[in-house]
Image (cartoon, rainbow, N blue to C red; front, side, top):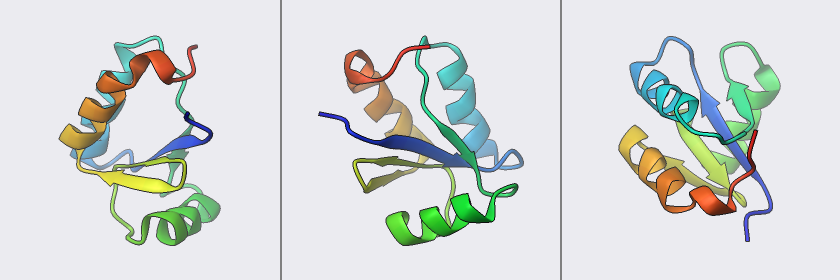
Length: 84
């Protein structure tokens, strides 16, 4: 069961843009955290993810890095995720 989920990203990162573009094709509502605008989001990413690398999808406290892995995970769990 998914209790918490958030996508940490940077608008200037092409890998983040790839994940955001994919999300725009879905009916999902995943909280987005821009690490370039929010020092809180940046610190959350460092604490929960262990690295300051974007994009990073954190699900129930577990980080998923790499745009391909994130898109695959979202696709595989689509029916369990919050909708718009």
